[in-house]
Image (cartoon, rainbow, N blue to C red; front, side, top):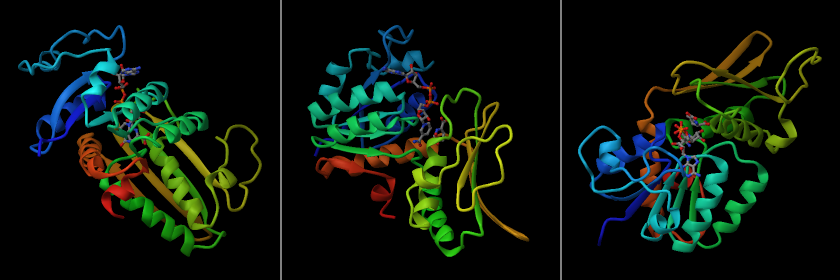
Length: 268
Ligand SMILES: NC(=O)c1ccc[n+]([C@@H]2O[C@H](COP(=O)([O-])OP(=O)(O)OC[C@H]3O[C@@H](n4cnc5c(N)ncnc54)[C@H](O)[C@@H]3O)[C@@H](O)[C@H]2O)c1
Ligand SMILES: O=C(O)C1=N[C@H](C(=O)O)CCC1
């Protein structure tokens, strides 16, 4: 059987370039296209040369319709509005859409749900094995500890990140809330500033640090009188996200339409 053809969106971005290298290094997939947004200086250039290496015979394009039509999978780490548009195109092409983009509003998620009626969408705010294991641990610890244990999620990322809390922080917050039998919307505390009053018992708080080239760090803190439990994940290389995304694209090849996440892919 022919190896699945993969199109990478946002190919000049931090994750885009890492994904290109990961797919090129795989013997299980073919890179068949690279998409960037209109006006990006890489448009019309050979992808390999734009990345500073040898020519690859793939021209970076802003014609997403044409590029996605020939793909079996689209790996997409861009921005919410772009991802919603790519979801429609992937659905029309019946291609697996792997979404790493974060920062969606609920209206965006409704549109992704509609697209997933036609083709598989695999979406996760973090595609690393370690974070997806940590999600399960967070749910268990939250369920085991009573409401006298306060839960706080602290995350740190590089100074170019545009959304907060991070997608990962929200996954961890959702897991903690689920462990306590609630949705995150019921327990989430808005960002703190000024005279906030004392902490609301049972709430889940979020704090975001932005600086330098931090790839991604997450702590889930469970704090009570006299002791603390801290669950921590440290990412030091974006390759962990790209490897997870490629694994998801391959896993999705024999799946029907629907919404999936990395727990499905990893069998967690
Ligand atoms: N799920 C994960 O494991 C994971 C890991 C890392 C980053 N992310 C997320 O991935 C996204 C991208 O992160 P990044 O650090 O690579 O950002 P980046 O800014 O370096 O790259 C984004 C790229 O998308 C391109 N883009 C934006 N709109 C586009 C459009 N309409 N058409 C085509 N290309 C478009 C930009 O030009 C840019 O090259 C963010 O939402 C980030 O939070 C997720
Ligand atoms: O660099 C980013 O941006 C990252 N985004 C994801 C998130 O929002 O959690 C994953 C970690 C890196």
